[in-house]
Length: 233
Image (cartoon, rainbow, N blue to C red):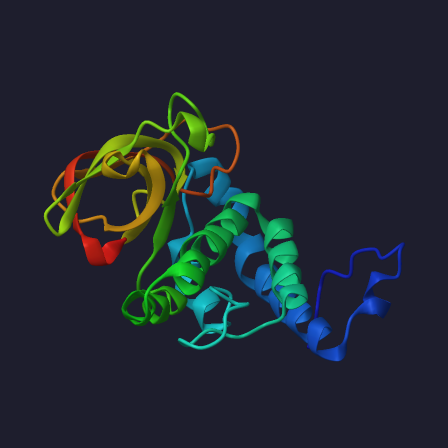
């Protein structure tokens, strides 16, 4: 495998890696060299997310790479970290997209979701057919859950969500959002909800004029009486 970028290894880190780990790293490195490096300057200047790379990255197993089953690659944590390291070398915004898809959307579903939720979402997210975002950060309190103002109220077998989120990676291109809200009926306990972004009352708008992460989609989210079934909890 021809690799253009060799880098430096003052700490002889490579000597600590197994053959499989080096293969994963070199595969990710070649992908970045061949596909991302040639276009990232244009993407950064134009503020454009290179969506054309989603399918190729999915085919290499980059989404949910460390998860097992549901079409995921089942990499070790070290291998997943090496993929993210190469992604970061190419562009922090694109790395952010991949790590949000994997660690902040797929992993919570994998670790805490029902089997029905896993079957419905994980294969589609792994293949890049569906994209996700993670809705924690808010305009007034940042990523501090204690100050969270987004609320969920139980009505029959549904929850009704109201609130706003800010600085959300992939917000306007996501098919599903992992939304965190305080449940009024449960003494404001914070719960996570899988919210399909085409539900009435859900709106996402891109944030423009960023000085960094310009090749990544960053959005604000607004929820006004968004109804989700209790099975999305």
